[in-house]
Length: 547
Image 1 (cartoon, rainbow, N blue to C red):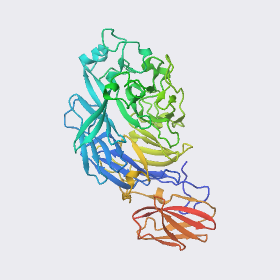
Image 2 (spheres, helix red, strand yellow; image 1 turned 135 degrees about the horizontal axis):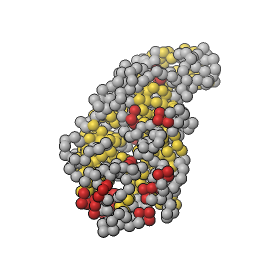
Image 3 (cartoon, rainbow, N blue to C red; image 1 turned 180 degrees about the horizontal axis):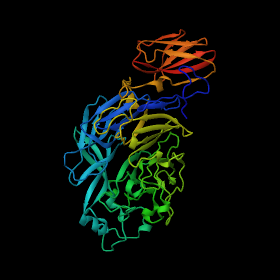
Image 4 (tube, rainbow, N blue to C red; image 1 turned 120 degrees about the vertical axis):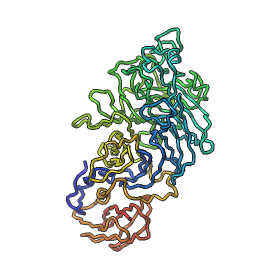
């Protein structure tokens, strides 16, 4: 846990953490936090901050979130926006309608509207390696179409049903796109309600299809699925989907043609657009009971990329919605694969695994202390840490391998009006954040970019957590570093003889070396620097800020 510093600049071997009374922005940080830039989306802006909460870049749209945002390898920003022009009758949480592409400097280079009375983009988009974009949308099935598909008419309280659709867009010009691939869940339904209608069959024998009459305790409204995430895995050429109201994650094949995606055969795995894998609620395909359910309104399932800890596993935020008691957790699972992208399944059973490989939850006192019914995300970081966005409260925190919090940040921006909160005041009650994503400093999109930090987003910021961050490797050493922040000169005082001082930037490059106790940073860019103070065979590390 984070410990209070006993006195300013008095550190010993047993003190490895810092303490702060900050209420917004960076409220705690340790040396074990992954050094990266964090992207999140709120009101009409996307923000990129460093670990101290200082603003590195921002992008401004005319639209509220719709809801996801991504940095691209070339430094561009892809963002979904909420179109509120009355063009669509489809309205629910996560509604969007427009996709925008910005360059690093905030200029719009491409935008595309996907919104009408019968279809609308919502929640998620995803940038593909080939430059195309996956888009998640809801389309309207009329009452007649839903009944013909086998829906029980008593489950049509809105007299319509939403089909979930995924499109692959090839951007054209500044505001057009070619639709080069399409998938629809209504091509992959099963029902045993009415033998005279489409999709009739034995539900329990067809887990690769979705039971159109499974409501998971819902009311039968048009938004019966509420897919809230699509993520892509390049190695498998597969898409991972989160169906919130079914409490399942699905995997589908992307190697198909559009025609194959609507069928039950075709593509690499010869199952067309049927579900290759599903997990979280075996009752949905009649291979379990409510007690077998493991997911509860989850968000952002994604494969962990090769080369990272827990590679090829799936990490997700399990919201815990409608579970008793309600509490959230982060899960990591290993889908059983006989080969890459081919999932093991035994007929008349549920999809594995039975247990998670990793679960984080905070049940030490009140289970609901860590609970957000909606939004949120989890991300595996390269150093083994896990970044969690508890979206309801705009609270981002990073866990080390011992599930200790090594970085905490509270979004200070009000989602309703875009205003910032003053440090020392409670966080805004409307700082809900859909996701937070860390990008390592060697991310290609940062190449050649000015990453010099500006002031934090909160008003009257207090950078004490970062200023006091240090690790001291020997006892009885008193070190002073002042002034910090500085415009030019840094002075170092110590009870031990100083052999040399090295200064490194955030890219790990040494920019200054001196054998004197005064360091001149006047020629360096604004930003964060790390001091390595060599003394009697030991090293003291300190962080300083150049204004």
